[in-house]
Figure (tube, rainbow, N blue to C red):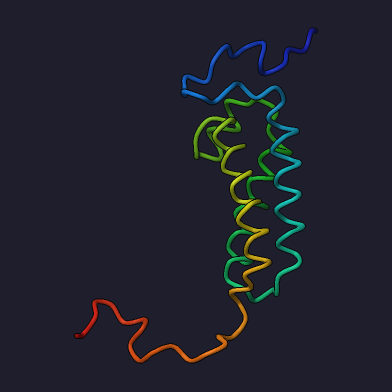
Length: 122
């Protein structure tokens, strides 16, 4: 039985500027691994880490257990494989920025009164 690459079956994504991924399983696996490693550097109680880690672990498990790309796309439910790759790349960029921003640390100065109130009372 001859094994075909995903790219052999799909000529175009139908999305302007988004080329067909040559090996989406490998690419997603690598990206999800990098995101998880970045998240491990954050405090366990950090909200961004908790919720992002949950989503990425679920998606990584789907990638590991699903051979068919169309089924993988359906199970994750967030677009074509190429869109999932783009989302993962953007999440990795954000995770790395969050490491430098450290939003889980306390504020340097106290916020002005009612800064977090919406709609404004004034």
